[in-house]
Image 1 (cartoon, one colour):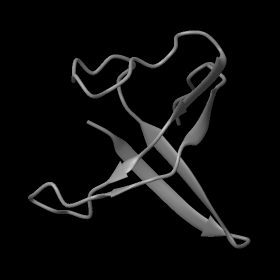
Image 2 (cartoon, helix red, strand yellow):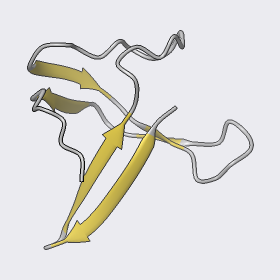
Image 3 (cartoon, helix red, strand yellow):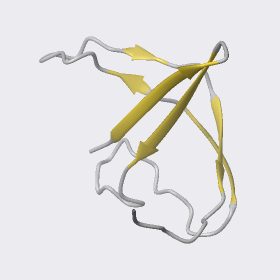
Length: 71
């Protein structure tokens, strides 16, 4: 339920994630609809068909809610 694209540049990763604000999944926190911050983590599955995955440390997500631009 998450789409991601990462770019390595200048010795750092920049990662853009996309998902529904409310997924309906029991283990997904609803994302805020107003600007603010939320603590959370990311589980990474490397094309695995089982529950083997890596979990990030606690991350600080900042929600800016900029107007969507296509193209």
